[in-house]
Amino acid sequence: MKMVICVNFKNELETKKLEIERIIREYLPKEEGFAKELAKAMNYSMEAGGKRLRPMLMVEAYRMFGGTCDVIWPFAAAIEMIHTSSLIHDDLPAIDNDEYRRGKKTTHAVFGEALGILSGDALLNYAYETACRAFLMGEDAKVVGRAFGVLANKTGMYGMLGGQSVDVTNEGKQISREMLDFIYKNKTSALLEAPLMIGAILAGADETSVSVMEQIGRKVGIAFQIRDDILDVISTTEELGKPVLSDEKNHKVTYVTLRGLDGASSDVEKLSNEAVSLLKGLSCQNEFLLQLICELVNRKK
Ligand code: GRG
Image (cartoon, rainbow, N blue to C red):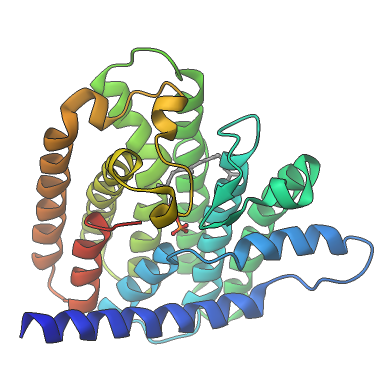
């Protein structure tokens, strides 16, 4: 029985991923005119693969709270654009200086550093242009505006960018557990909190439920990042599609260095169980979302 559930989940995951990719493709910029190279660099990174987790979490949260309209799609495309823009910049020589991601050459390695910087900037801006289209879809502008605010807030200095700034300015330093938690909560969790909250907001969920979705995203995000630390130590370049042991190379304090492999693994399990309990405590349920969250924290890549 367990095997059947597992195979069904994998099939469903693949079907949903293909649906999301088809929709994202509709929103991508056209490769034409004088700025064609910029559009090519943006599209290269958007089409380089990846798990499409953030749009998937958003769409599933939206469905869980009873959402049925197309208003979710511009937001789903936008969150993947923001995520991708952060990966392009993360790989740049000034930050991690990585040549491979998702088993492919990174954007700056293919298009040069200048277009790496510009395509990251352009994708970030294009994400907001894309999300703005939701205002023209006949939904309540206040609700769309609230979702838009969450998207911007969780990306910016009180979210992902804030966390990343503390990460880069403390590289090579002996940082406290408190600071590491701040980094993970912002650099990684913020962009997992946002889709769960936005899905709930757009479907008309109440304040308390939106706040529970935020807490779930926080726990899943921290667990996801700790799993990233673990994979950096135990996985291979072939499986991950990017270099391993990069934290050691960049002299980074991680959960593995602070807590050891076993301690870090039990932290992942604890956070994941807490996220699952919060999800199960909500008045509406989505079995696929539940399985996705369990899968995420045990991921192999
Ligand atoms: C330009 C908006 C912008 C930001 C620049 C560099 C930076 C600021 C932020 C970096 C944030 C970052 C890379 C956080 C790590 C989060 C993480 C574990 C990403 C990997 O996510 P996956 O596994 O990637 O979902 P795939 O490849 O599956 O899409």
